[in-house]
Length: 268
Length: 270
Image 1 (spheres, chains in turn yellow, orange):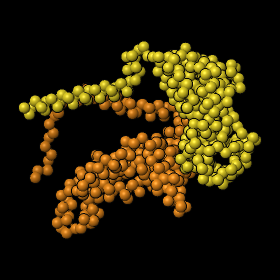
Image 2 (cartoon, helix red, strand yellow):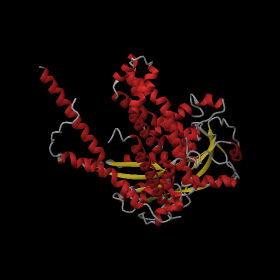
Image 3 (cartoon, one colour):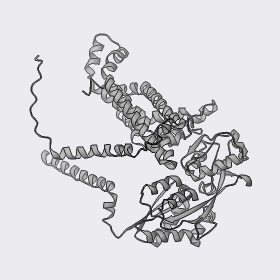
Image 4 (cartoon, rainbow over the protein chains, first blue to last red):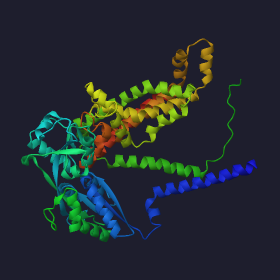
């Protein structure tokens, strides 16, 4: 009696263990497991952090129109994404928040065709809801604990230009890795102010307030998209790019706070 | 009472199904580090290593990791002792609570620290009234490091204390020592190698800490930018510099581990 119950337990736990092992193996060898359901196509999109909300919406629509296609997204600083693509990361589509980072990929011949400007974004000075530090103007940053993006990210480059244009001497308290990290520090109230994109103000849904920048200190950036050279899903990648450039894509981007791109079919 | 150790029986040849996976594991750990060394550009190495930003980051990493370990030792040793030697209700729960930060993704740890010690945190807000703000300061780096490294210290020290028999404590008590004196003169000296191992483990974890630091302390050169943060930032703009910084961290880690092993672990791991 006792033996049989022990054995039963032993068997069960061994089965569980085997299942766990299989799962672990699958996780370790994802492509191998994905191959099992081989009618499913996978499209990998690398996009700038500022594109998070609008691209998630576009990906949802794309997946609805393409049953059997699984879209994987990675949102990060444009500089990080460009570095990853250069190092051979398996991206099919890449979208950056400025032409400099995209230019690196173009120069290194990693794009299937010249990138296209699909939207324009503007920098914004934001403060936590309620503006606890009482910031009315960009010049108030000289007496505030503010955060910006690291200089390597497009938003950091633009922030630096705004700060030097406004003659701000005080250093930021932190150089965050991407624009969403800046937004988080401000919306949590850890910083008195931060420099993000207008689209982030929309995305924050009231957690931050925008303080108008003077026209002299306003900075815009182009958002570019391109299919990566050697993509396994070049056709799907092209279709996604077309969706972003379509009037439908334009509406999604506009709702997120983007302005239309300056050109729609030529490289910058 | 014979002093000669009996001849050990032969256990037979090591089976291939143990040796091969073991070797595979070793190769998996060594190959990336060897590749890192191979990829590091030699040209301009001295200039890059003496760049003030690099030296600042290295110095900050070393002192904050050390400070975090000092704090961890002060609060962690008594905690580990209580877990190993005291019988109290809810001890398993306490052990689980101590272990949670070990399994927590570091970024989540950073968010939790903001909720507690941030400017609007439960403890951070009252502190701010007193004129103390922690985020974006080197103190925040120490707090983040302590949070992620303390569990390593507590768990390994508790193991060390359990390994040294409780009977010695009892003998000391019978001979008239108070519990405090027993702790200082018997328990701690006997567990010293294990305590040292815990400190090194925690220190190493602290040196490599990234997620909690960047989330809670931010990233500014010379103030909160530790080596891992500097490596990450360099990777975005200047991958060659990132390789150099990574190599430097590797060398520092190996040097410290080797040094401590020589000095403290000689008796436990011959």
